[in-house]
Amino acid sequence: MLRYTLMRLGILAGCLVVVWGLVYSGVAPRGLGDSNGMWIIMLSLVISAPISFVVLRKERDRASVRIVERVDRMKSNLEANRNQEDEAVDSVSTEVSGVQGRTSTS
Image (cartoon, rainbow, N blue to C red; front, side, top):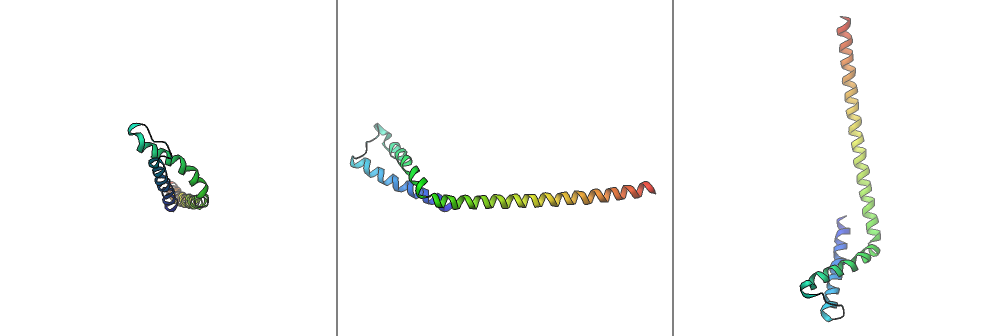
């Protein structure tokens, strides 16, 4: 997951440099007044999103498989803990009913 995030940030940084160069060379329009920095950031985000979607498809699939495996492992651990608790409760209730049965016959 960290690898995917770093790759996505790398694509954003690359787009930021390209857009900054295009804006300051006059190829792309400038923002109004003091909004030029915000314009460059927003334009970089808009451009980097579809690039990341296409280029990082395989890495995103690998990351999602790892997340699904981790969730499945956590679910199985939770189920195992739940079963242990049920067994402990069953053994205690069996012992309690055995003790109650012995005290009522005495």
